[in-house]
Image (cartoon, helix red, strand yellow):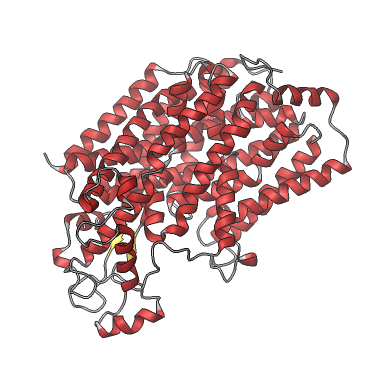
Length: 590
């Protein structure tokens, strides 16, 4: 059976399962649409959280970013996993006890302010729309290769599938669809990693294979990778080549941004009891770890496979002939995400760091006139990994289904967060409180449909690779919602004016900093400064500015609180009740 047919079977079969689940579990009320009727089992919810969490950025892009940078990009792993622990321990149980549907719902009621609710909605929309761009980008990359269409067509197909099961099923349908998607994506990610680890090291456990001996060379795998990269003028893989400040700020930004992500937080509203929120968090960490501990091995082994494909006899011997390039290169060239240019006309492929002054003389001696791998989109690496390693066709088809499952599961959660904010927080709780349950459900579905259209358009013009785009969303969440939620739970004295001013300062400062280098609202060509270290304020990367924005949020909120009216007594009592869940079973609705 040819590869295209296998791809259609695996991808099409998984889509039929998702749509079937959405029809079976379609939402019939706003409670089911927003919170799955608060009836989801903790293990089920843990698996759904993991699928919601492990987006296209985790599945498709993260290993690619690690592969092409090395240790420096381990900040993605440290920030995302550490942030999830922060969310699970400090926020999730307390938010569940409060008994609301959405994050703006919590902020609006905790800070007894319509303005606070509206600012929270604005923050949520910016975060979620930015985040969903990354998912759409990842889905478009996967579709473009495995269904042999261009990236934009693939993105439109992905949007159509999400539209069907997210608009129809709401949180109830999305929850059970995400369980199926988690099973698909974790199998798809693990099986190729096991095969490749066996090929390169003889160790079937990728986490151990990363630190094992490279069978062909007899050297430790990471040492062999370092050697090849340094021989070609690249930085060594295991060293840190960014500033410690930026790595620290970026990791912190990802951590606190994770704890402020609305589409993850709302998953904790779906369980029956406060104790179930804690159990869900524990199970989710287990399910997430199954993928996150494999990602460093996938990145390193894929980079080694790529370099040894181009230089099969080592960097001192002739490189790969363009005409003899393997099928995986030929296949990905068709997508436009991989491209070569024979700059010296020798018919061979040379890949090296042409920007390295130390390597320029070596390249000149060899007759090389520039890096001939002119395009290698980092988002293709995990999807191409089975082909690079020469694995069976069914494994390639499986990883196609897994990559799409990762992108679509998170996209659905984000779109639900957007539609809930519009229909529940804007329409129901702000502008039209007398709207019927049926009318609110219709508004939720219409707003989700509009969000899909906007996300699709933005996905066609992304500001970076999937994981980079997602990192911007984490910065926005870190600087806006996280401080407001933390202060709302752990500070009885924080008032509405302080919270509003803090959110506005945090969101505005981070947004302006991002837009300065990435373009206004991420529209290409509208950036005011080039995104380079020379132009960054105090050398702080846009990816790490969320931590600075969060600090500004806290400072502005505290100063404003000291200058304005104190919190009403009944709000202080409510906060005390949230913080001390004495014998709490069912969530308390204030």
